[in-house]
Amino acid sequence: MSVFPSSAQPVHFQDLGLIAYQEAWDLQESLLRVNVGLKQSASKVAANKIATQHYLLFCEHPHVYTLGKSGEETHLLIDEATRREKGISYFKINRGGDITYHGPGQITGYPIFDLEKFKPDLGWYLRTMEEVMIRLLAEYGLDGGRIEGATGVWLGVETPSARKICAFGVKCSRWITMHGFAFNVNTDLGLFDHIVPCGIADKGVTSLQKELGHQVSMEEVKKKLKALFGELFGIEYVVE
Image (cartoon, rainbow, N blue to C red; front, top):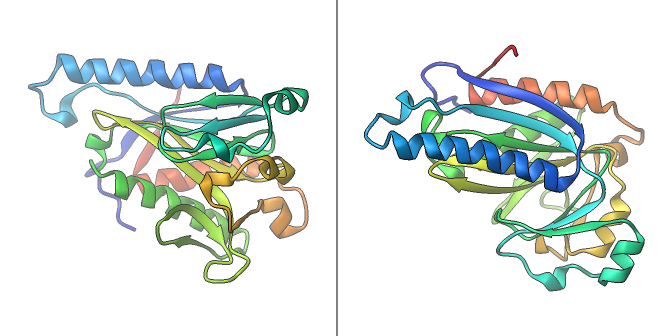
């Protein structure tokens, strides 16, 4: 897959560790607002000359279900009392997509990218993130792929046992992205039983741990993910 920027884009990387969903959402919104504000105040300046900043945030969340703006509330299959009893938060949020689960053992990633400095094309952006995950899976000997019309990365494509290992949902304002991906590493897959994941009822969900038959180092996976983002998006990480 081609890298479109003519030169490496500087990206600030941060691993936020285990962080409450609302706190991470607020951080993303604040970074997006700064970038959008820079574009609004420099509307006559060439896009690649505006001093917007790119960020790539990795984290894990306490148990939480999030429902995208195009999702159906009926895809949350447990009532509020049961959800609270299980200690699972719930947010209606401003990304695309339907309902998903975030929790410990899952790497959730939030790229805050100015796509005008990469390629102003959301389809390209999503396909490139999918390619990152497909190549990551290949490093573990797994054959990941795409299913037409179903954004995400899957195992067992074109088989009755097709199962999703990475979900995506993004928001974009003036070509500034937020939200991103959720890659299941050592995730408790039982928490997906209380939702219709991504609104798809006839396919399963899996994790790296389930596919390999053992727990996997989260730090190892993060390191590989960071490197693949750098390679496929043409990123040079800023030393803080």
